[in-house]
Length: 416
Ligand code: HEM
Image 1: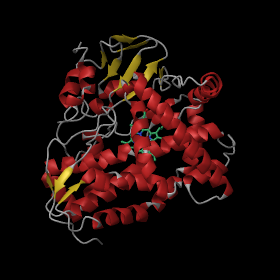
Image 2: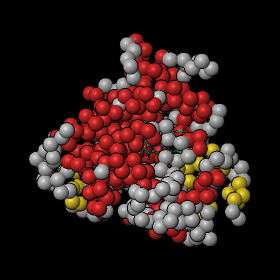
Image 3: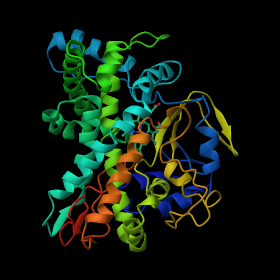
Image 4: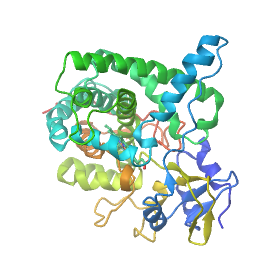
């Protein structure tokens, strides 16, 4: 069995720039037990098998619990009710069937290929606009100047969040994304801040949904708030709020990281940057390879609902389980030469968007944005160079990506 402290080392920020050697050691066991009682699923074959196992539950978030305020009305009545509602109506990424499937079905009715296709021109225009602002720059921070504003604007427009409110989501999204980090989930201070943030964003969403019902527009939130599924009827209001928050947050950090990790990888492999510049047709394959090689989501967690015996290890009932997607995507038993960035890879079944019933809802949108972004960056940035390598990383081990990516450039080519 591999060293049972390896996953603690993965979570250590010191290993954020390069966790892959740790993954290699973890893969010595398809399911690697850890000192803290968790079990890490490491190989492609084990992930493929266990993501379909209904004994692994996504309902592994601790119950919502407001900290005590000293105000009896809040502590004994208002906040316990809020906690109950919050725990019962979690976003569907943290739910199991049948609730998960019903909520996801409502979303898929609105998140249609036609609606995503309709965003195409708008995404291209936003990309060009963001780059135009850097026309004479000699240095940029790719995260702040480009990778962050693009997906945030796109998801807000798609949902129908007014542009003047966008800025408020930055802090909220960063705070709520900690729900995906195993250690942050049990840290009292983080939990308290998450509850406060959720209260604020839930109140905002409630008002916005009310407004959508009064003044319907052609956006996804109006669709969710007003349309009824022939079988399921209309989504309940508490679930609607949780779903709106999920879509908004899921559309933030992940796509930011795909674009930033993408540019970092291309600058480390300049031959592929040049290739993308001269032949943008390779973009779709290059993005699939990025999702395998430097994915924005490294792992998701589950809870074992029963004892599960797999490949010589038994995961006990109740144990936390880590699906280490980024390790499966680098498994040499599945991908020849897995540590090589190779956009020409033919057979590329990565776990970049997870798999099975929780497969990413936003995958088509994320692919569209990343393609528009990387093609334009390759075409328009003049002589881009990394100012620091490795760059500083955000704290998250699950949602992994640079906090900043500073580039030296010699201005930006004129747009289309
Ligand atoms: C590059 C960008 C993205 C990546 C790498 C990514 C990755 C993932 C992954 C790995 C999962 C699986 C979670 C699990 O198994 O528990 C997931 C689920 C999900 N993603 Fe994404 N995502 C991205 C962008 C987006 C966007 C733009 C949206 C929304 C607009 C979105 C919405 C969702 C939702 C709602 C789920 C939950 C699906 C479910 O539980 O059925 N994602 N994503």
